[in-house]
Length: 288
Image 1 (spheres, helix red, strand yellow):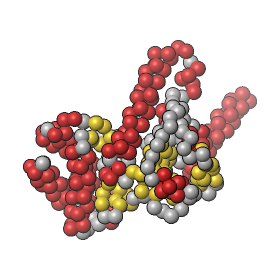
Image 2 (cartoon, rainbow, N blue to C red; image 1 turned 60 degrees about the horizontal axis):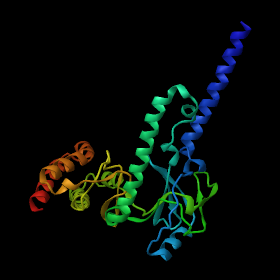
Image 3 (tube, helix red, strand yellow; image 1 turned 90 degrees about the horizontal axis):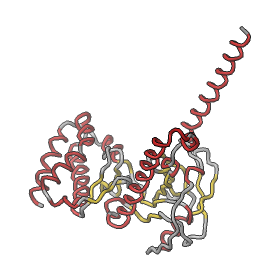
Image 4 (cartoon, rainbow, N blue to C red; image 1 turned 120 degrees about the horizontal axis):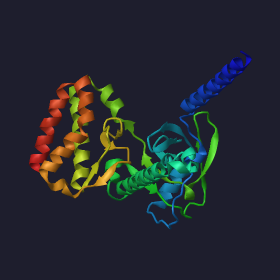
């Protein structure tokens, strides 16, 4: 009986610890500095507008949100965001590295994680090189350099300060946007404004297509934003090169795939908009 009681108390305390750990993770979004630790290669990067970039990075940045691929911090002047790559998500768990009898599975997971990282970094490079206007991208830093020689100050949700070495970090700087979903919801009873937002979103999306790229994002509503009344693609992690975009059949298939989450939103909140999207897409494709 005594041994059962000991086991019960042990399990109880383990449960309490697990609940506390999970609660803390939810409160902090799981942010820790070690999750930003990278294995980026060395490279001497050269970029334009260096003075402007340094001015942006002279500010403190406070915690804003967590994305699938990055932790996001906003600048003091509320005009910019810096997104630090969450490199930990591209690593296999510790237990898998020490258990030899899982070698086959470990090899598959290593390949998957490496491909995921390479695809993400390639997507950031596409945004920086070809889609700055469509994504409000200012600068992308994806290798170890010696061009900054400074640390940036960031604050977490509890206003605790951390100092990040910019030369060794992987990050993206973008103009801060309002979330597309929030703006759509705010204007869901205003048909004219919804049409303007829809047209802007379609124009930006087709601009990306005409440059030979697609956004393989699964949720275009959640991962887009509004800047100066223009809708942009704010999530940079899913861009792919696709040479067939001059083919109208391929183009039609791709825009219908990409807009399916937009239509889910419109079907629920503004049903007329789904039909409007189809009509506008047809007009754009005919005129290409």
